Structures are given as structure tokens and as C-alpha cells.
Length: 297
Ligand SMILES: NC(=O)C1=CN([C@@H]2O[C@H](COP(=O)(O)OP(=O)(O)OC[C@H]3O[C@@H](n4cnc5c(N)ncnc54)[C@H](OP(=O)(O)O)[C@@H]3O)[C@@H](O)[C@H]2O)C=CC1
Ligand SMILES: Nc1nc(=O)c2c([nH]1)NC[C@@H]1CN(c3ccc(C(=O)N[C@@H](CCC(=O)O)C(=O)O)cc3)C=[N+]21
Ligand SMILES: [Mg+2]
Image 1 (tube, rainbow, N blue to C red):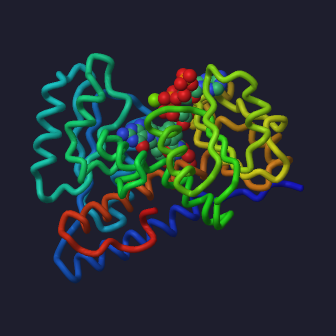
Image 2: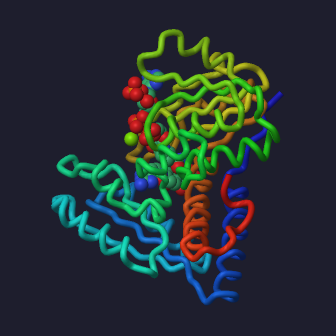
């Protein structure tokens, strides 16, 4: 039987409309407008696309959008100055510094300079520590979006075996922490794992966050498993064209899995919707107002 396709694009549109309603309510009751600032260093074309999409969707939700573009050779101190200004700016409730940063910049230093209350990516060490210790944190957008889709499909995740492929600070580790919080049995596999295929085949929930085009094939997947594909890989499609594929071989896996999120149209749109949700939550928190429901986990 063919897998159910998890429609992240539609789910994200629904989430954005709940965010827009929350923004309208804040404006109406308190005259507040949530603001999201994005810092982009360099000319990476893929990042430019994300930044453009984010800016448009931020405005569509009724929020303010601020963009700071710096050349690829910008000094670290210049970036830190901008972060300090955004930290102090009462119109800015969320700050996102687009990664990767150029090699001459200490990304950890920049991320940890962001006010944790405005860290809508959830990458600051204090948010990472809060999540790891089961406390209320700003949760990274991509794992948050994955969790929302999993809960929507499966309800309780308790007792399920979740296998996360990848151990990055931005996807794999926070994803594993969230699944553990949901009482899954969590296995993390990575490039040094021995017997990765057999481990993945044990998964009730398989999350692929690797960055290897179509690495996960049908023989890695337990029949009926729920598979979330985080990978965003641009591959050569011939005739000078490119094509976007995930870390999961969609056609073969969809014949085995119970449900599967596609690329594009899966995790990507959810990531942006969760960024907007986190910005609204940050705005409510900083003003001591009740947090809009259904936007955080
Ligand atoms: N949809 C979205 O919103 C987002 C998508 N992405 C995409 O998700 C993917 C992962 O991103 P990110 O976590 O930042 O990537 P990183 O490169 O930071 O991490 C990749 C992880 O995969 C592991 N890995 C690499 N090769 C293999 C292999 N052959 N077998 C098993 N494990 C392997 C690495 O292991 P090791 O640690 O041992 O090196 C590492 O832990 C990328 O395609 C990225 O573009 C990322 C962020 C958001
Ligand atoms: N500080 C920081 N935070 C991030 O969250 C972050 C980052 N840096 N750097 C880059 C990665 C990647 N990422 C994506 C977000 C949305 C889509 C997305 O919207 N994808 C769509 C369309 C993609 C397309 O067509 O180009 C989709 O999958 O359907 C993809 C990738 C966020 N990242
Ligand atoms: Mg990375």
C-alpha cells in the first residue's frame, strides 16, 4: 500500500493563519506588532531565497520584517554590533542569523550574543540547555515543525522507537531531545554508526536530517513507519537545470512507509511557519501576556 503523503505545505498554511490571528489579536488588544529580524551575511543564493520567502510570509502574518544584509567579508564585530542593536530594539521580538556564516566568523559567538528571549531559532546555548533539561525553551523551528506533523499523524508518540539520522545542533540533537520528551525510545545515528540500515529498519518514526540526496531507500524502512524527510538537496537534473530532493528516496520509500513527508512541500514550509509562531510567542512572553495556544510544544 502506498504511504500517506504528509502535506507540510497545507499544514504550514494552517499554522500561519493561526499565527496571523494571534498577531491580529495582539494588535487589537495591546497595540503590539511582533517583529522578526533576519541577518544575512554573504550572497549565498539558497539563503537569499529563504530570506525572501521568510520576509514575505512575515508581512502576510501581519508582523514587521527587518532585514540586515552584510557582505561575505563583513567583520565579526560588525555582525555582533548588529545583533546588539537588534537585542536593544523594542520593535524586534525575534532575531534569526542565517547559517552557515562565513568561515572567518565564529558562529557560536554570534548565536550566543543573541538575547535568548529573542532567539527564535532556539540555537542559543541557554535555549539548547533548557530543551535538553526538559524546561520551557525556544524550540528550534525545524524539529518543532517535524514534531507537529508527527503528533498530527500519530497522536501520542509514547513508547515508539524513533530513529534520528544526523546529530547537528540545529536539527538532529534538538529533534532527539523533543522525541525523548514525548517518551519515544530514541536512537541517534550518524556518519560513524555501524549497521545504520538495520537500526533505521527498527524505527516506528524515522527522521532523516543528513544532507545526502536520497540516501534512505525502501530497505531502510520498516513497513508502515512514519518517515520525516528534513533534507534539502539541490541536485543536477540535466540540461543545466537543478531539482530539489530530500534525504529519502521518495518513490521507493513511499511503497513501504505508512506515511512520508515530501521534499519540497514537507518540513521546509513548516520550518518557516514555526519561525513565525516562535516570533509571536516571543512577543507575548516579553510583554508578560498569555501565550497564544497551539503554537508551541
Ligand atoms: N527543511 C528545513 O527546514 C531544513 C533542512 N535542512 C537540511 O537538512 C539536512 C541536514 O542539515 P544539518 O543537520 O544542518 O546538516 P549537518 O551537515 O550539520 O549534519 C549532518 C548530519 O548527518 C550525518 N551524516 C552525514 N553523512 C552521513 C552518512 N553517510 N550516514 C549517516 N549519517 C551521516 C553527519 O554525521 P557526523 O556528525 O558524524 O558528521 C551529521 O550528524 C541538510 O540537507 C539541510 O539542508 C536543515 C535545516 C532546516
Ligand atoms: N539560522 C538558520 N535557521 C534556519 O532554520 C536555517 C538556516 N539558518 N539556514 C538554512 C537552513 C535551511 N532552512 C530551510 C527553511 C525553509 C525551507 C523551505 O521553505 N523549503 C521549501 C521550498 C524550497 C525551495 O523550493 O527552494 C520546501 O521544502 O518546500 C528550506 C530550508 C532553514 N535553515
Ligand atoms: Mg550544518
